[in-house]
Length: 170
Image 1 (cartoon, helix red, strand yellow):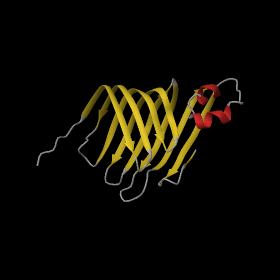
Image 2 (cartoon, rainbow, N blue to C red):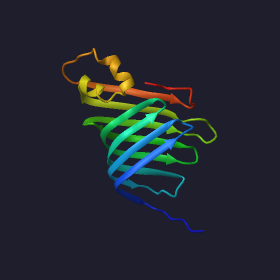
Image 3 (cartoon, rainbow, N blue to C red):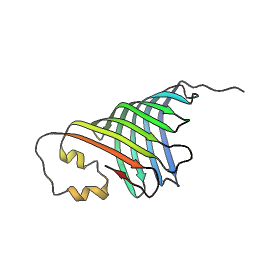
Image 4 (cartoon, one colour):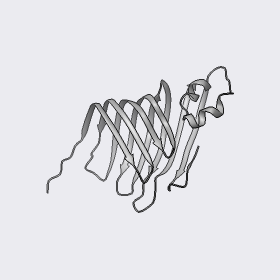
């Protein structure tokens, strides 16, 4: 049997729709340009991703976490298909002009229900007002009364998941 071993994929002007009824996830992305490098035919490889895209929606459960935002991504993702583990090496993420460093892992272990998340997100420079524009509408209203002056650093983690009924801790 023959195998096609792609080592590099270039995308330009591609719309991506992802829907997972069981996990209650729905994504709609408009990729301006993206370059993906890796040994895709392997069960264990590192995926290099450089991309500019527009995220129309990134809905998990009832919450749309990213709504109508420009995004840039430069990341190294260690993929282990056999164990369902995706380890995000130090990555740079820009959302609506705000810069973040992201790392951690996402595990979709075969035979288990749901996806477990353990992510760390850091921003060195931003304002409270800028950050609040990134919050889902369901959460943003709670913070409208807060005001700030100057710049700040953000460090947060997102952990949990695993089942539909178990949410994530932020």
